[in-house]
Length: 464
Image 1: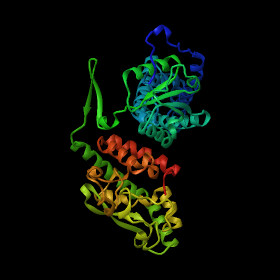
Image 2: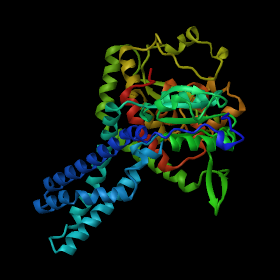
Image 3: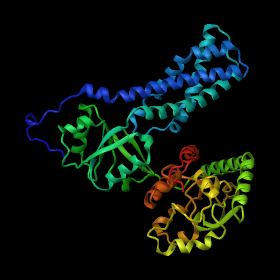
Image 4: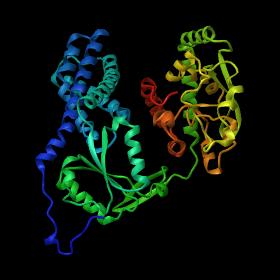
């Protein structure tokens, strides 16, 4: 823990390094400028699209000339400050604000044109502009953040703490490269000193101590402010707080509110409507692709097109899950030669180089196209679009009572495991992200996970 001198006058002074702080935060300034440039380009693209769809050229010109107004609205809504304040900022988390900014900008433009006496935008043009600006801003922001990560080095972080919490922190930084933070060193709380010269070479301090006391936190805050460092704190009471908790305040007194009730019927109804809608549209729109995959499977190996296996659903009830066949015929009969389920240390397994997988099957697995037939399971209400991945009945039989919580909701085609690491997660990490999902089910969260699924699928990380 940080040493404190009894006599404050004898305490070693902390050297202020404002120039170093300004250099540290240049990457954040560059990111803000790149995102703002992306927003401006997005509005220009929307203006061109509006003009191409039949709107007058004057309307498109007015949209472009009003770009500073769009940027001002985005700034007022805090869309240029979230990255600096949060260790991980995803564009999908800004979607609601982006839609709101697009609506506010469209309304502001229409109001300005009306006040100045110019031709007003028609209702149809305003509607198109709103949708196009929201869509293009989202795409350009994703691209701007990706470009920024390519042209700037990751933040250098010092992790302050010891034990499992430090390991978990390092693990998350490894699993999510979009955080763009590299842990370069670890210090125990006893070794942390305010005058440590190593602090001049890092950009962020992450406190991940199993025993976080107020004096240590106060010192870390003071040092971070003095040296212009970013500061993140991982609560040591992660197990006590859990994931189904919200912090609220009554005046200056904080309250922790625990979610101890079941998911509302309206939320479940919303999930079911989303499931049926997407499943029907998916089966119709993807039918040419599904047919092509079926022909490829039949042409490359003997056996049926579909692989049907009993999996555990809600409350452990067995159902037949559909997949495109990715293995040789009779692969189930060979499973006992590869792995003994009864001898597994954990009730889960995934083989990186399964000899039973065909060449076409390997491609289907890498792209997750083998999962598409599960849209039928979704229509049959056996699965949902989002939820914990369904496990084999034989494996679920080895669950402990504490692990059976993942059977309290419908299994999903995608889920938290797919967006937070896929096959790279160990069993405990998988259970942790699935518990977080189950304790905080919502339609909005399902939409977020669906949107986040595309990136790991395209990158093919953790898929085998």
